[in-house]
Amino acid sequence: MAQTSLHSSLTTHTQSSLNEEKHLQVLVLEIVTLKKQSVSQKNRKLDQLIRCISRSAYLRGKGNYSSNIYDDALNRTFYGL
Image 1 (cartoon, rainbow, N blue to C red):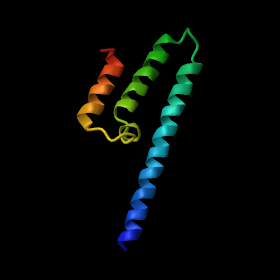
Image 2 (image 1 turned 135 degrees about the horizontal axis):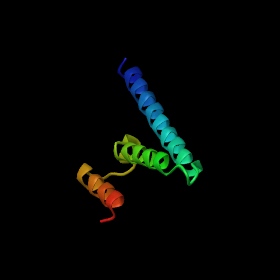
Image 3 (image 1 turned 90 degrees about the horizontal axis):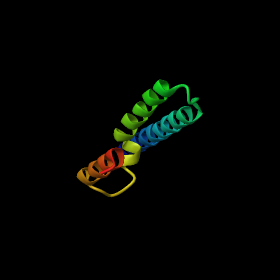
């Protein structure tokens, strides 16, 4: 019974990570394909991408770092510190 629950949990987590990764890819493609005339639309998409990345469990789980180190690196990336 516990093994089935663990398998289900892992499957759900994996599916969630794949969905999140796909969503990030779609946002990037949308941003790249926007025309230069669409500056406000591009800015909205960039803002959406930044929010998605900052909340990303997919990216957060890629290393064995404490949440403080991850958050500091994320802030330095976004704010150029």
